[in-house]
Image (cartoon, rainbow, N blue to C red; front, top):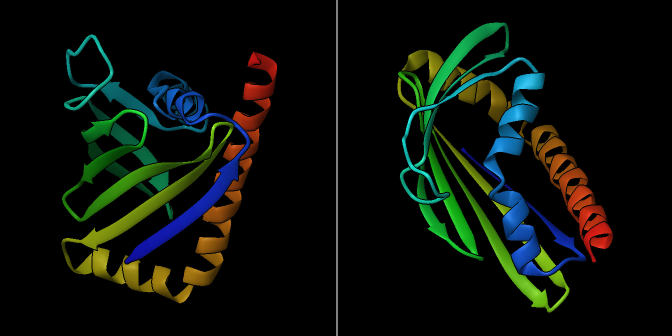
Length: 155
């Protein structure tokens, strides 16, 4: 099952990429919402090979995933793979420079169930796909607005 959301941001592509690749900020934000995140690699610089163990509550159950950064091409793209015993998630972020001060961010998510219970979960998500896609689009738009505001303050 695939989801895609995109939004245009009034900020240079390098600025947007730097913000998108600020993993510590995303980690703190997720932890404030109740997720448990542990960095599992020993890399000193941001790049391919970074990995995390993540635990969070979803639909009344505790979910655990191992997340790995598998592609990192500054300033245009990064891709993550998240694995759990029941569900694998492929997530990639694409940045496209529309002009020197305008960037399009595109978020792709693909859910791949690994067992029967995950298939049932994905099937129930398919029933709500339109609503979930709208919610994802709103989240991406909110994020784009935040980055745009940061860019204006930074300039």
